[in-house]
Amino acid sequence: MKKKKIRILNIITRLSIGGVSKHVFILTRLFNEAPYRSIIASGRCESHEKDLFAQAKDYELEVIYVPEMERSINLIKDLVSVFKLYKVIKRLAPDVVHTHTAKAGFGGRIAAKLAGVKTIIHTFHGNNFQGYFGFLMSQVSINVERALALLSTRIIAISTQQKDELIKYKICPERKISLIPLGFDFEEFTYQESDIGGFKKRYNIPPENKLVGFVGRLTAIKNPDAFIDIAAKVLEQRQDVTFAFVGDGDLTPHLKRKVAQRGLQDRVIFTGYLTELNPLYADLDATVLTSTNEGTPVVIIEAMVNRVLVLSTSVGGVPNMIQDKVSGYLFDGVDINGYAQRLLHSFDHPEEVQPILDRAGADVVTKYGAERLRQDFVKLFKELRIR
Image (cartoon, rainbow, N blue to C red; front, top):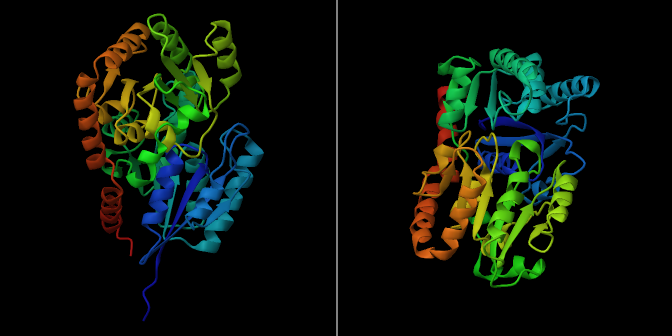
């Protein structure tokens, strides 16, 4: 008798360029061979975002589109998306529904419970408990997550810091939380020798210039204004440095105006979203994060595996990823002068930076490999008696 496949439905708010989508892709691919079958359900990207449906097709992944599911709150669309997800779940009859990000976690878990799914898993890729909303909305978010946790078989935290926050805010009992860091196929975002020089050539950057990047959504929680301030500080002391915003978001028009007002148009560029980042990492000397809150930023993982220096605020799960002055540099808050001086020093003393890059590259392979991710989930499925 042929053994029944274990069916897994991964639900994500939107398949946009970013770390969560990359994680869902690798997770779906890892569990899309016997004895598993994995499918993705995704909502609509925001107008300024680029979707990854074509890439999902290249990976031969099945994606079910639920256009009413989107990041912004809309009562009617949210109710419709729950109903559509319910119909999808009833049709597919998955053994496991695994939701990712807040909105998918809301609609997906409710729909799965209504459809009678026995195993409902939710991964927190970040949280909305602080830094995103005011006090009142933060309290609403916390209470909603507490209620949704009651519908969940297991909650997954992707860092120790995040697990501690879930316990601190009493989202669920500690016994219900599994710590499973992200995992990736590093070959896919490790640059090749042929990539070197391609990014600088495309954007008319002098080959001898140092290149510093800000990779991610240009939105308030990422604090991209600080990147311009850091750039201005560095450029006061040397002119052979180019700063690149790689991404897009609601703050893009504001940031472009700020760059123009400060006369930095020749030194600070905007690329928009890029689907292929290997040429960027081939030419990048450092990547800067100035976020006020984070989960586990995939840009840090990408930079570390490509031996690119990381400078970041010490927020969220970042301290679990980087040891200060050992595998990168951490800052308590956005110290503009501190960032600038650290960048300038690293440019002048590459011999001090190389051991940090080597350590970062070694650490990231050990902590965030795809095989480790697969083993963690196989162990979880056994624990939850999923057969």
